[in-house]
Length: 264
Image 1: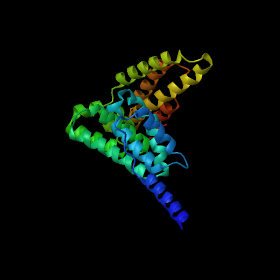
Image 2 (image 1 turned 180 degrees about the vertical axis):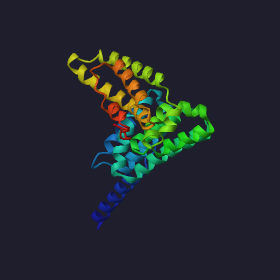
Image 3 (image 1 turned 90 degrees about the vertical axis):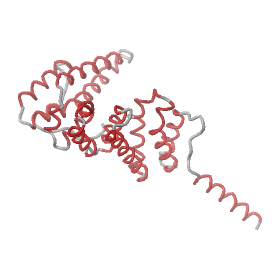
């Protein structure tokens, strides 16, 4: 009887420990929390604890580690979404974070650029252009200056939602070409640190990324019946990226086909 009680007590203790909700430590190590969230998201891990860590990380990481700005909306978001595909509460958390970002932007609170970036990244990760497109239309009607700031981030969502007229109202072709040139230059500089054998693949990845960024604008022009303008924009991009650059999505855009709305 004593042994049975001991085993039962041990089982209850382990169950309570497993069920205890995760809370961040007093001095959070952001890198460690993200690593633990990734490990616990794997099969055989603890999806509830992982979801809590991802949720905390998205909401609080920048306050403790501002250098995580890029990781937070790229690798960390991909990890969170991978968990969400298997664990519905994590999906609900991502959708709630997306809705909070939209509400912050609509309310006109502090750090609008952060809210814009969060909303655009979450919508793309969720493959759902609806919220970004609806908010862009609302900003267009109520705060055009903020709409202009949000337009480069929301362009893909707006075009994917079939609102090419709204997209073209805020399309700055010169800025798009300049931004592509600037990003190509920066990424090319980064490639210099890679072994020479890896540089062609890296460059192709850069070109593919910039192709995805520009294709919605080309598609919007084509959808509006401005085929000549769409071709001229593609020609300018080709001149910046090189005549050998394979801009498949932009060429699809010439026929009015917007690229799939999702995180690649």
